[in-house]
Image 1 (cartoon, rainbow, N blue to C red):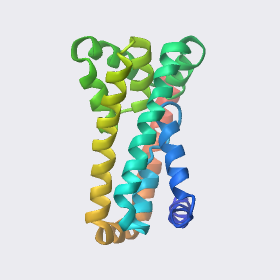
Image 2: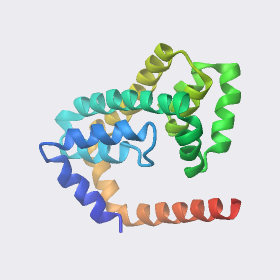
Image 3: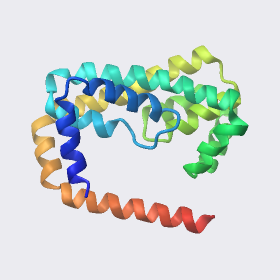
Amino acid sequence: MLRPLYDAVLRLSAHRRASWVLGAVSFIESSIFPVPPDLLLVPMIFSARARAWTLAAITTITSALGALLGYAIGALFWDTLGSQIIFLYGGQEAFDSFQAFYVEWGLLVLLAAAATFLPFKIATIASGVAGLPLFGFFVTSLVGRGLRFYLVAAGAYYLGPGMRRQFERNFALMSAVTGVLALALLIYLFLRH
């Protein structure tokens, strides 16, 4: 099921506009889109290792710019759009936690969300609701996203051929595990409401 998608991403990575697609996904993932750009970034680096650092830069910059959209949704459109996005992803608990941690830890919470696989879109929207200083928000987003995407790029670059062979050899197993986890998450979210 996922194998054709992976193959399509590898074909896309050779397209002359692949960087634009990566940038667009990175931009919208920071505020509304559920698919992390890493899923495009890694196969694209597998296909064009020499472009690893350029692709990491594109992903970092467009993700940080997209974070500004998430911030605007929280600051300006919380009642109409922001709360719906949080609800859609079942992120109310994460949103509440971010708000509580922000009072105590400030921008460090945003940095953690930006640099890890915590839901960054929830952090960007919550940052707008909380009224984080916009300059500090943007710089923290840029640094955190840079840490994440350059580490991912370094892993794909330095472990490249061996990592790609392992990935492709175990693709069926990884797809099955991912499918089971996604199904479990959907069942959990359904039963929770």
